[in-house]
Image 1 (tube, rainbow, N blue to C red):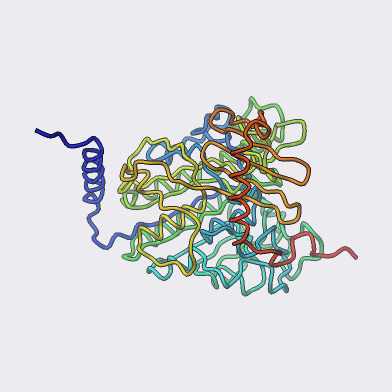
Image 2 (cartoon, rainbow, N blue to C red):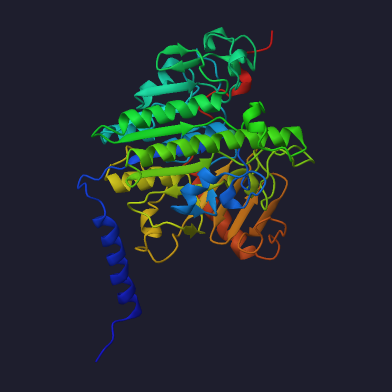
Length: 466
Ligand code: CA
């Protein structure tokens, strides 16, 4: 008698697992609710599920514990605007010239997420979703870039790249009234088209209130919802209320303590979001993503604000500390709990996973992969892929492929084996010319699909000094 091959057995098992997971969905027209929670400048190690003991995040950790923790997850740029444009388009933002933080000039018709690109919210709108953004936009301040023009039905928050957290600091009516740099952090909040006077004493709590309210309202409806919960914490200015500061009496450094308090406030908000899903009995078919938009900010020489360990460097850098972020996903109906996924993934994969699951044809080819086959045992091998970064102005470039990471600047080049050297301390560029050659050739091919100049003016161009 012949025995079935190991491969055949594994294939049958994979189908069985996928079948059981599919069978747990009662709704044939399976459109999950979708929540993307993004934090701003949170360090790789400043979350419980990556090992932080100094800043407990029990609620954020629930997402990882009840779903998947991704240990090698990247964003597409080491700072805010471009990283978010990659996430929201599902495409390398370098394709459309989103090379920096856009000017916040509300009269600038070019500075923002180009209308020639489809945003994830627009894609989901086509599939019948009702969408809300709560928090930070940063995708352009000219009216043509407004969230309402980009597939969102509701908007609470602000248009700039950061914000003051206390109500008494919000003294500027809107972007048109901004006269000096930094005043854009002081604009009044907006709820849909109207100025919204803060009810809470802290912006993070207010953002959480709106997120919970949206879920409570939309969770009762037949149509699925998409919530883009874009906290600006723990991005500067470092500000926290006493309630949260009091949780960290043992942190001596005031900035680190405030930063910890800011993350703790986000964690409270995440807990309220998850509890609301439970109370409404919609947690099973709601997919929740959690990630930071880039690595934590390091104060030069004193790493006391954020903790990106064991990674090298932080925000703004192509070393791992800049682009590798805390990342977790929970989807009880589709994805088994308590998984660690250790292969490289990207924020680009969120749009690709949703498009594949919902069978939506994106307007343009997405750059990510559908994660589900890798998480539910259908795909046996790690995806064969490369992830890229570039800085158009400096010419610096980076690529991750397999175990290796290759970086090149005008001054030097470096090759690291991330599987054995996560801290990027041993440059192998002289020892492994073959890998270097292969990486350079891949980079050149990839660059051919990218824009050759920025699509817009950057944030430092407005307001001009008198
Ligand atoms: Ca950021």
